[in-house]
Amino acid sequence: MKLYTTISSLQEALKGERAKGFKIGFVPTMGALHKGHLSLVERAGEMSDIVVVSIFVNPNQFNDKTDLANYPRTLDSDMALLGTVKCDYIICPSVTEIYPVPDTRKFEFGLLETVMEGQFRPGHFNGVAQVVSRLFEIVVPDLAFFGRKDFQQLAIIKDLVRQLKLPVGIVPCNIVRESDGLAMSSRNKLLLPQHRECAPLIYHTLSEAKELSFTKTVAEIKAFVAERINSNSLLTLEYFEIVDDTSLISVKDWKDPGIKVGCIALYAGKVRLIDNIIFTD
Image 1: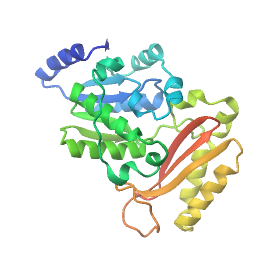
Image 2: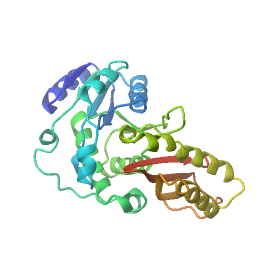
Image 3: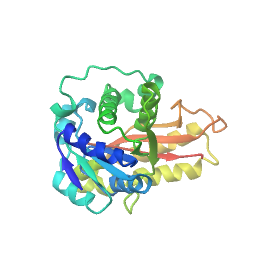
């Protein structure tokens, strides 16, 4: 496992790997790694010859500067974790290395960027598109691996690849959860003990909603989730939507075509958490 901080040094190393005919797998991260990230790296190791992991906290996707300042940065422990799986190269660049000049590109994703996260985090997905397209340009991977927890982001990245006609396969990977059901997230480290204790209610509510969906309408399920989450004084629901998994159009009836996904965002104290569950597959 080799750590690089400059783009040129990584690209020189990857040039030699490509000359050998090796397939490059890429896992972009913002660090503060956990078992969920490791599952992506492990999947990359199964499907690729060479695995590259980036660790870069992208300022362009934070619409809240306090959130950016508070985002955990744990390079030493990140490297220790990556040492337990197949990881060949780590790129941990500075902001000026990724953005030698300000990135002023504006991407258009239509409805994909205006609903749910887009409604509450203006500019977030444009920042995601900027950094992901930049990282793809640097690494030039054959495959890139993303978790399903950031479901809307995954839809955006798929559309980004389509728009830019990039020769990279996007591999979605399943959500990894704690033993009590809480979706693993770097933000979980910021939870106060009382908020961590009640956070499993998120997945338990989503799971119960899935069971109830066989006998309840879409509207009834949405009302159930909202009532259950808001009944806990330590949690504040931001949104819960049931959407088509590709278009992200809001589902009105279970008979609508396509796969339905329930997506949730809420605050546990001051920490914002997201999760989702597939209702039909």
